[in-house]
Image (cartoon, rainbow, N blue to C red; front, top):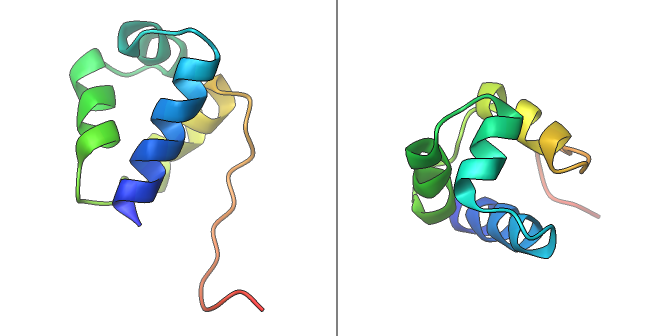
Length: 68
């Protein structure tokens, strides 16, 4: 799951033509935090994901259980 989140964030950031530094600025975090999120094996917290989703203009969906 963490790998998928990281790839999704990196893909959207790249689509927007933003550097990690730009995404960090827009989401109120640091460039090293963005780098960790994009390459980490540990899922980020919702506290991290909510401002990032907002900065990327993307919805944040959290599902518990299996999708039908």
